[in-house]
Image (cartoon, rainbow, N blue to C red; front, top):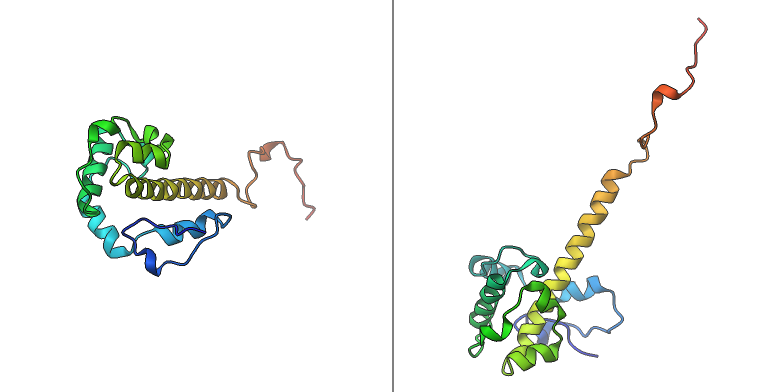
Amino acid sequence: MSRVCSPADFCDSQPLVEPADDVKKVIDLTVPRPDIMQVEADTLRVASRDPRLWTRADVVSWLEWARGFYQLDSVDTTKFAMNGRGLCLLTRSGFMNRAPSCGDVLHSDFQRRYAVAVLRAEEVKKTKRRALWRPDATHGKDDSKKPKVEENQ
């Protein structure tokens, strides 16, 4: 078993998580406290909350934010010359190769952001599907072709 949380999110107070647990349970453990989220919202400047949509400039902004937030040694941003999709492909060892002193912290933070973005996207899809399917709707049936029932008075 391993602890699943970002390094600054108070791992000591987080329960252990089995690898087979539901993704939502993992996300609940890794979402930072509201006061941390407020600090992050005030200082992290990226175009999207979804890291898959980040540009190279967004990646550099995130690296600079993480360096200050987690009080990391300097991070060579030239070793992360990629967009958000590129970061998605990096494993923990890929982060460690690019930032030996803090790659594990960067990987944990990025994976938390990625997982939250995926869950949010799934929720949006479910909401759209629910909005499109209504049990009382005719689902595209043309009422004009129905036989008309005449009432005898």
